[in-house]
Image 1: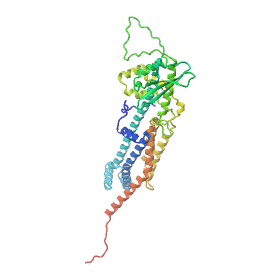
Image 2 (image 1 turned 135 degrees about the horizontal axis):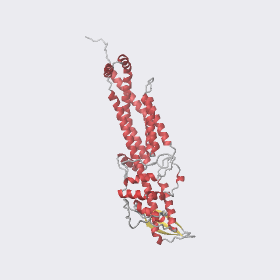
Image 3 (image 1 turned 90 degrees about the horizontal axis):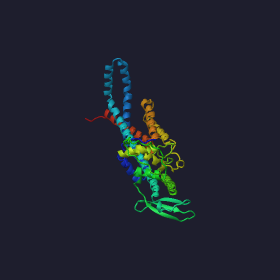
Image 4 (image 1 turned 90 degrees about the vertical axis):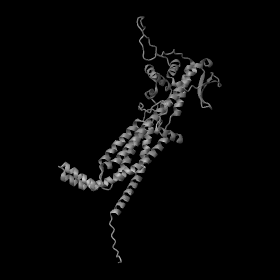
Length: 444
C-alpha cells in the first residue's frame, strides 16, 4: 500500500507534538510499541474525566426528557395543527423543566471534537513516523549494498581468482564509525587475507553514484540502437540531463561482491525488523501481505524531499527504481513470513462494539428503551476503526485496541461515579425543597 501523503513527511525526523511525545517515551521505554501503549493509557485516562462530565449531562437530560414526555405528547396532540402555538407551548415546558437544547448537546459535541482531533492527529503522526522509519531502514540497506559494490574500486589490491571465496563484514569502530572488512580465502586455504575500507555513510544519498555502481558492476544495461541524426538536424533540447550508462565490466570479484552485498542486506533487513507478538513489522498494516516495503512506497516517500533537478533526473532515468530492485533482490521474503491475518482489525472492531454496548447498558435504566442513535453508532465507529486498522500502520491499530480495552475497564467506574454524583445532586435538591415542621410544644 502506498504511503499516505502528509505534510509531516520531510527529509528529517518528523516533527510535532505527538512525535516529540513518542520520541520521549521511546527514549525512556526503549520501543515505539511501549511508547504507543503508554500514550493510549494516558489519553484514555484523560478522556475518562471528560466522559464522566458527558455522562452526567446525558443522564440528567434523559431524566428531564422522561419527565417532560407526557406533557410534550399532550401538547403535540392538542396543538399539532397549529405550529406556532405548539412551539410556544413546547418552549414553556422546556422553561418549566429548565431544559436547554443547545446546552444539552454541547458537552457531547465538545467530547466528540476532542476525540476525533486526537484520533486524526495521532494517526497522522504515527503514519509519518512509520513512513520515516521504513525509508530510513531502506536507506541503510541501500548504503550497505552500495558500499559493498563499491569495493570493486580496490580490485587491483585484491588477489581474487576463480575458486576463491570472500566474506564482507561490517565492523563498528570505537568512534561509532563503520568499516567494511573484506576477507579473501584462497582455494584450499583456511587463512584469509583481509582489507579494511572506510564505510561511506553518505554514498546512498547520491542516487546517480549508486546507479552507476549498479550499472557498472551488477547488471548489464540494455543496448538500444539510436537512429543517427542527419547533419542538417539539430539535436533537440531536453529538459533533463542525459545520463550515459557506463560500460558493464563483469569480473569474478564483482559477481562475488554482488552476492556478498545481497547477503549483508538480507541480514540487515532481518535484524532491523521491529515486530510485536505475531506482527513482523509494526510500521506496516497487519495483513497477509509481505512485511517488505514496496518500490512504490519508497518512491512516494523519497520524492517528498527530492530537489527539482533530482525530480527531473529521477523521472527520466528512474535511478531509485533500478537501485531498489537490486538492493532487495537478495532479501528472503518467504523466510520472513506474512505480517498477520487482520487479527488487529478484528480485535479493534470487536472491542469498539463491546465498549459502546457496555457504556449504553450501564447508563440505561431498567425499562428504558434503546436509543436509535446509539444503535447507529454500533456500526459507524467500528467501521471507521476497522478501516484505519485495516489500511494503515500497526502502531495505530495497537493504540486503538489498548484505548478500547482501557475504556472497557474504566466504563463501570465512570458510570458508578456519575450515578453517585446524580444521587448526591438529588439529595441536595430534595433537602432544599423539603419543608421542616417542628411539632414540639414551645414554652411561653
